[in-house]
Length: 179
Picture 1 (cartoon, rainbow, N blue to C red):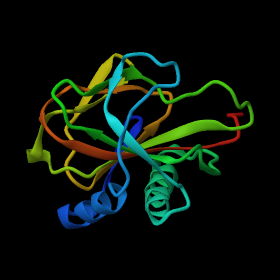
Picture 2: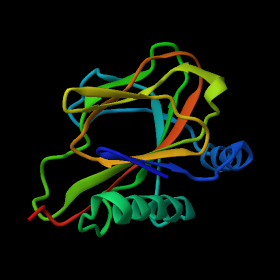
Picture 3: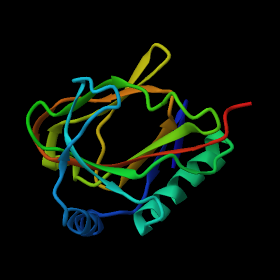
Picture 4: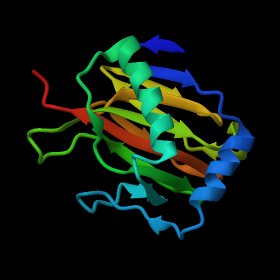
């Protein structure tokens, strides 16, 4: 595990065999075109939603809790919503610059975002996760089992896929508004 500024990386130990099991279990339902809350065109991908109280949600909550205990120290209570299973598999699939903050509920704030990669690094080109922290942009090419946790107000994007398939699990953990 490593701490770098405002993100935390976790080598989860999830290998291709485990990732393929997760993918096989999730993809029993048809994927849907991904949408943004504001219906903008900054995103092109497909997704499904997974309950936060599933075994996948429990595993990912453990990773978020570890990152929070070791770096962020936020007051957290639960997942903000379901966990997103996301597939980028067409050239040009991407998610443009955005944050994971949502307006609305004043009693619950998204505080930490997690992305867990289920694709081996050599099975896709492009698709790098980029985080903009201050004036710096961190370019992260994720491998199967890599997880990254970062503040939900961090500007980030997934660069366009050039070839192959990039699959990830994404979630947002939160709690009461910041004091």
